[in-house]
Length: 108
Image (cartoon, rainbow, N blue to C red; front, side):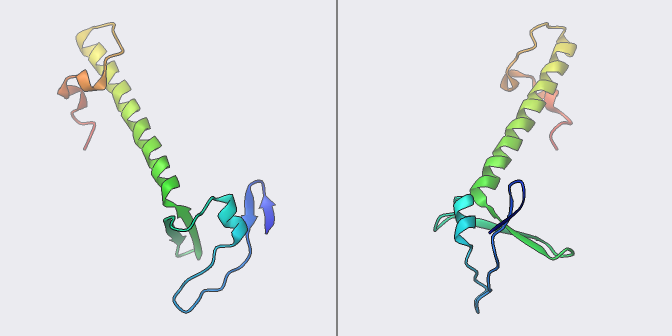
């Protein structure tokens, strides 16, 4: 294993078997906490010839954070619009309590 930059490594080379299988080097499995039974997504870039693996659980966690961020942003936008429409100074309404009109045109 060679470190080629801060947190960037080359873990070695692997040989593709008859059935397309490879063995992920032990140090890579250790660094990324890859255990037997884990689900990995295989991603790549055809034009550049690159291929990579991402643990599905890591991507799932990232997607949940993105969705939470979107919900917070939409709630914030909706709350600001409601305050402008109603003239209320109470800017901390729950998104679930906002009128449906606040969301029209925002989610399509």
